[in-house]
Image (cartoon, rainbow, N blue to C red):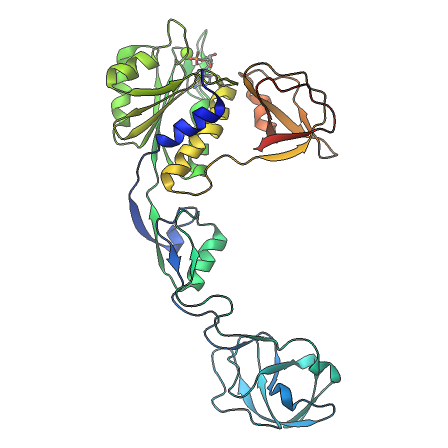
Length: 393
Ligand code: AMP
Ligand code: MG
């Protein structure tokens, strides 16, 4: 058995190499930049008014003084001339600041009479209300690094930088094969001794969320031929996930079949709970993860190992599952030799309380849990109010 830290490090080495493609911004939501993105212009492109008001020369301002209003500057239509002493240009938000002017008095501090304007004493205070050319970013500045996941905000920034397209990594295709004689699809009528296969549904949704394309290879019985035949469908995938049949029982046929297909095992069994029997390996260029069949084990190990594997393949920089700390809202006994992940919910005071049932077959608790409290191997007893580390869900 290897530690969680060792398993995490080994998993990252299995990440497949993905190509890239160029997409329009409207197609690039949640994708990962394959190349750094440099601004194609200055922002703002010229000194720009941040307010509606009057553009003047700062040195010209004096209490009670009258200025001749010589024209207008609009967003999209600059005032072509220059501002001389004793002159002001009516200006609106987003307009280029006319030549000669270095100050915009907001209209709330202006007294307009016909073609003249004078200003309250407040006009001299505060700031210029001018955004200097290139003050947000300059032509050539790299504002989005390779590996950035394109959130709506990052896409808006890419657009402001004057990019219509971006080059992103391909989405990894992640094949999922569910194994077990007892499995039937959700919605089917289970026969005697059968159960509903729930894992592939949760995994496919997680894979899509993390940036992969799930490919469901369906359900197969615990038979070598059936497993092997189904795995031909994984050949054009970047990552293969098997579910179930990876433990030590007589009918756990996944490892022997993978072995016969030429999968080289990287490790099998992690000192953690739930999820101990996880197996990882390489099949040509593909990464292989054999997840345990218990639903909580499958989804928790996917969170801890499949998530970073997908993100690493995408070239993202921050690939490890997020952690945070919170006060504990219960008493915990000293932990055993395996790293434990306790399904927990926040109480009204913001403390994390482990759910009473921690069975790795029970999806009920996992579905409503706010986080997984991390209990390191041999952690001492923990008490109400102690800070505990957890993975937010
Ligand atoms: P295994 O890892 O094959 O020993 O399976 C462990 C437990 O998980 C057994 O109770 C299985 O019936 C159950 N199980 C296996 N695969 C799935 C699945 N895809 N969905 C839900 N439960 C499963
Ligand atoms: Mg099984």
